[in-house]
Figure (cartoon, rainbow, N blue to C red):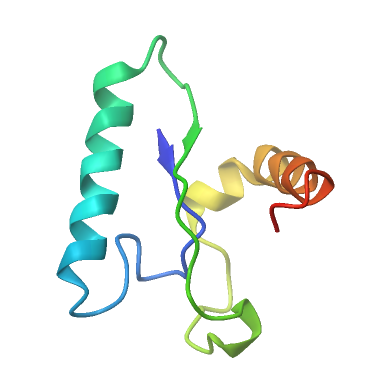
Length: 86
């Protein structure tokens, strides 16, 4: 599975950003092509250009895929913050 920390409803990027969307799709296909085992999670190296607080179109509940992987997402987020990448 290819995971990306983009706002709900924008899984491949911003509207009209064809170049950015193409990069996300190519990275996603690469993850699928190179997966070594079922259920493997690979986090894509893209960051949303706005601060999450400014993104006001999130739904009231998290998406099902995030809900299933929430513990892993939190663990990796903490790891990234420790490394100073967030």
